[in-house]
Every structure is written in C-alpha cells, then in structure tokens.
Image (tube, rainbow, N blue to C red; front, side):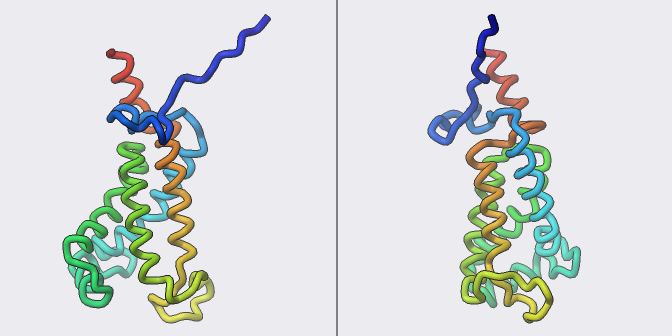
Length: 170
C-alpha cells in the first residue's frame, strides 16, 4: 500500500507575513519560466534607459525625457530607471523575486499610463513612429510578473534556497 504525501508547505499570497515566507516558493517550473522570461524581456529596456545600450539615451537622457516629456517627478523617474535595470538581474538569480516582480508591475502600470492613448497593439511592423506603440507589451510583462509575485521564484531560485536554509536552522 502506498501513502500519499503532501508537498512541503510554501508561501501563498495570504501567508506572506514573514520575511522567510516572502522568499519561499515551490520548486515549480512555471514560476521559474515566468521569472527568467520577465528578466530577459525587461533587461534590454533597462539597459537602454540606464546605460544607453541598444540605441537608448542612457540614464540622463531617459531621466530628462521622463521628467520633461512625460511629466514624472524626478525621484519617481530615477527609481523607475533603476528598477528597470536591476530587477532583471534579481529575477535571473531568483533573489528577491517577488519584490523585483512587484517593482516591475509598478513600472509597467506607469508605462501603460503613457501608452494607453495609443491603443492596445504594439508597432509590430514599424508602421508607427517611435513612441506611439500601444500597451499590449506592458500587459504581457504584468502577467509574467504576477506569476512571480503570487508563486515566488520557483525552481532554481536563491530565494527558495535561503528560505529552506533559514527554516532548517529553526
């Protein structure tokens, strides 16, 4: 006769009340895929905005554009640029996954506020002038981030290993 075992408990949105619970997650593949995909999706934008890579304006140019053209307060714009650069690294490692993903949700909500007037669709065929794309990309990023916020970093995350190490010391 075989026995049915329950999987080890992990953090759920309602149980995220301690720092360890914020780190913990199951060794599931889906949050891992969402976490790494989101990191790879967001890094080029962060590198454009913060470093000037991939044809971007770099930190100063992006800060000027966000404050001058978009009207964001300078501290919020600087925070957005920093989050967009650093969160993908945190997500790749699975370190502070929920916080990094939540930061990107905030960033994408701000970006939607500037793109909503352009409609839903991206500029898939280059027919629109730069900057007049819709917000479908932002919704996609929010959906990936939601998986990580809800389920944690998943398999191969530093978060999960840290949580397990702390729990085993108790």
